[in-house]
Amino acid sequence: MTANAQRNRRGGVSAIVIPIAWVALAACSPDLDGDRGQPGSRLQDYALDYALDYALDVEGASEGAIGALPLGLELAEAVTAEDNPTTRAKITLGRLLFFDKRLSVDDSVACASCHSPAAGFSDNLRVSFGIDRRQGERNAPTAINRFASSRQFWDGRAASLEEQATGPLINPLEMGMPDLGAVTRKIAAIEGYQELFHEVFAQPVSIDGIAKAIASFERALVSGNSRWDKFDAGIIDVLTIPERRGLGIFFGKGRCDQCHSGWNLTDEKFHNIGVGFDEEPIDSGRLVVTGKTRDTGAFKTPTLREITRTAPYMHDGRFETLEEVVDYYSEGVISNPFLDVEMRRSGGQLAKAIGLTGERSPPGGATPAPVAAATLDLTAREKADLVAFMGAFEGEGWQWAKAPDSFPQ
Ligand code: HEC
Ligand code: HEC
Image (cartoon, helix red, strand yellow):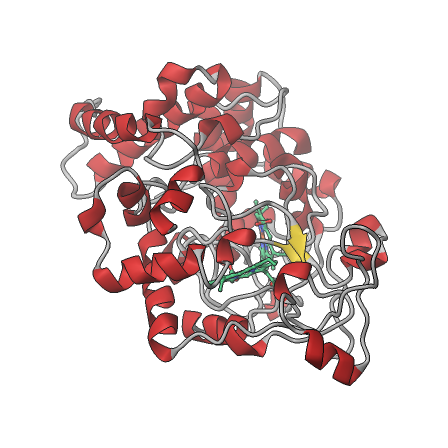
C-alpha cells in the first residue's frame, strides 16, 4: 500500500516533469554579474533567481510555470496575500529585515536568532532566548515552507504570514519593542531602509511594509526535491531499503500520514496528541484561539520537511531526538480527555480502567469513545526504519537564504 498511498498524495504524474525543469533551471542559471569569484555566490544568485521564479509563479499561478519550484511542492496550495504580491525586491528587503537585530529593542535579537539557517530556520533550543535571554514556553518551529499555510504559530493564532511577522517584534520575551509604532520609527531612522522602502513600496517605512517584506522573504524559504520527492517521482533507488521499510510504516502501521499528510507532510489542522498533559499547568494550545473545549491541548501538525535539522521536537521542545519522538508515538502517548481520535484507536481498556470518557462522540452519536492512547507497538527495527525514513525529508530550496553581509545604514 505504501508507494500507492504515497502517490495519492498529489494524484498525478505531473511531478515527473518537474525534475527536468529543475535541472534545466540549475544548468541555465545565468551569470548575471561579475562577482562570481567567491565560492558559494553562484548558488546564492541562482537561488535568488529561483526565488523570483517562484515568486512570479505564485502571482501567475499558471500551470506551465510550476517547473520553477523544487520537486514535490504544490504551487496550487500556496497561500499569498492579495495585497502583497511577491517580488524579487520585496524578498531581498525582507531578507535584510529578517536578519537585522535592530528590529529588537536593544539590537540584540533578529528573527533569524530563533529561525537560523544553520538550524533549518529554527534554533535547536528547547525554548528560544529573546532579549535579555528571556525565555518563552514554546519551541521555535521552522520558518521553511510557510508559504503553504495561512494559519501560523503552534495554535494558529495568526491568520497569515503578514500578521505573524509583527508578533515577535513586540513580544516582551522575544524582540521587546514597546509597540509597532516604535518599530516603524526605529527602522525609518535608518536612511538605507528609507531608500529601500521607497524603491519597493513607493512609500515611507511602515509596519505594514515591514510585515509584507518579511512575509515575502519567508515565502521564498522553500524545501522540496528531497529524496522522498524523488522516490515519489519514480526514482526508487534514492531510498535505502531500511528507509523504504520506514516509508511503509509511516504510511501504514504507524498511520503517521493521518495527520502528516500531503506534499508538505501536514494536514494544517490542530490535534491533541497528548504532549504536555503530564505538566501543570497544561498549555491549552488551540483552545485560546477557538474557545472550544475540544481544542484543549491541540497544536498544529508541523511539517516534517527538514525535520532532521530542527531538533528538539514538539511545541515544548521536550524530545531531543527523532528516536524519542517515535518512542512516544509507539508507546508513550499521554492519555487525556481531549486526545485526538487518531491517537486512541485501540485504547479502550485503559480508558475504562482510568475512567475517562471522550469529548467527541463517534459517528452516529453512540457512547462517547474512550480517550486512552493506543500503542503502536513498533519493534526496535520498525522504529529505526521510521527514523531513517524521516531523514529523506531533507530537501533544498531554502539554502540560498543566508545572512546578508551588510545591512542598510
Ligand atoms: C525569541 C525567539 C524568536 C524570535 C526573535 C522570533 N521568533 Fe518566530 N517563533 C518563535 C517561537 C517560540 C514560535 C512559536 C510560538 C507559538 O507558536 O506560540 C515562533 C513562530 C514563528 C512562526 C510560525 C511558524 C509556524 O509553523 O506556525 C513564524 C512564521 C515565525 N515565528 C517567524 C518569525 C519572524 C518573521 C520573526 C521576526 C519578526 C520571528 N519569528 C522572531 C521564536 C522566535
Ligand atoms: C493525530 C495526528 C498525528 C499523528 C497520527 C501523528 N502526528 Fe506527529 N505531530 C502531530 C502534532 C499535532 C504534532 C505537534 C504536537 C505538539 O507539539 O504538541 C506532531 C509532532 C510531530 C513531530 C515533531 C515535529 C516538530 O517540528 O517538533 C514529529 C517528528 C512527528 N510528529 C512525527 C510523527 C510520526 C513519525 C508519526 C507516526 C508514528 C506521527 N507524527 C503521527 C500530529 C500527529
